[in-house]
Image (cartoon, rainbow, N blue to C red; front, side, top):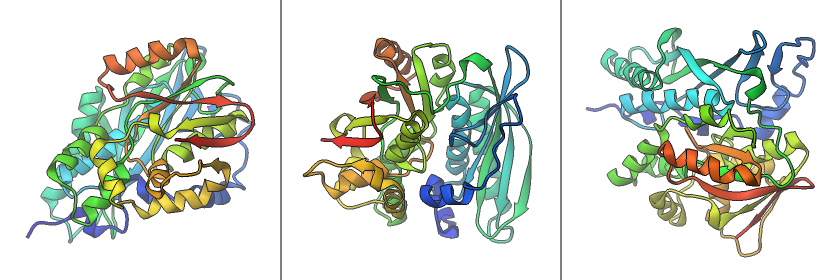
Length: 345
């Protein structure tokens, strides 16, 4: 009898993340790190990774990400988790140097060869990224958990924070939405092999354009869209900059098969938790369908980069995306004055 990894955990992928509102409450009393002059990025802006300056030309980018299975195939789970973890380095404009593995497995429930395949999946992604897994830590846990600590490097003057958007900037999203929808359909036994292939292709595509985009002065801010959904991560950008955003639903890329599933009613519970956390800061148009709103809150696992750039740089950013295999990248909106996010159809 084959083992379904998703049956061993209560949630999967970035849908496991603590809801945004609860996370803000938990972290509200976190001490400020203002006494450390070389800590260039800490917890103050809910950014993707910490950045610490070593000297005038080098800064270390450090992040960690791990979660429970979003798919049943152990090798694919390892690949998705590792791709997702390294994404935070790319989102800061950094280049990965090496990784450490985070492993929690229900020893006695999972055969050794299954655990080994999970690790092999992560190793394959790190090899593709050109870095080693140099160590890690493992525990016996009731649910399977896998991820990485990612360590990278970036020039201190080329960090792409998530809070530096400017009025008039263009929003570009590199990958289509719908990973949470796929995961919900799979959990309910309704995901076709073709839809699974679409999901896997997206979640194992490394966000490598982030390295090149660090060199573009016209790129003001960057983040990756993951567990809080498109709206949640866009709100982090607008709050950090003290600005607003306009988003046009028709311009937002969505995986074709995920679109069909979303219209059929598939949506993970995390979509509603996300909306409950930040819906009060979002203005929706009359006539927007429930499935459309849920897609904008859909938790993405190993989602795409969201790039905030001046109008004059948009075409160059799109060219870089296309050159690196992100043919589905789209302009989805614009940054403006005020606060919150306004959605149009």
